[in-house]
Length: 159
Ligand SMILES: [Zn+2]
Image (cartoon, rainbow, N blue to C red; front, side, top):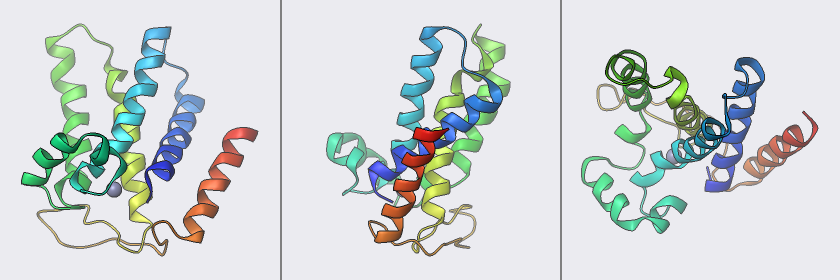
């Protein structure tokens, strides 16, 4: 998926989260939610030299590509799972922080994986332990992706 489509998916997932879980309390948490939502949605593609985020942060991308091939560990379920476990069980014991602090980042990250999984390239969600690949039928940058992106925009404008 293109960077723009990932952003749209993140906003879509974030708005659904807010619809059911409520808006984060206070302006700071709301801005933090939005910022980390976007960060989470862009971060997985640091493993690709040609992604939007890698062009903006080539050094960070180089560092990530030392340990992760494209759609490798960065695109596995283990990164968001580890962050979820740390956010739920470790951080609250150490710091006086709201448990939903990582919600935006997690939703952004998961929205990225969900939108890559429907592409023809698909994802190895359990990389590196399993090479089983889940894939869809959307070609990255193709007409169907544009259609989906447009439908998300329409949904966001109407609902
Ligand atoms: Zn990706």
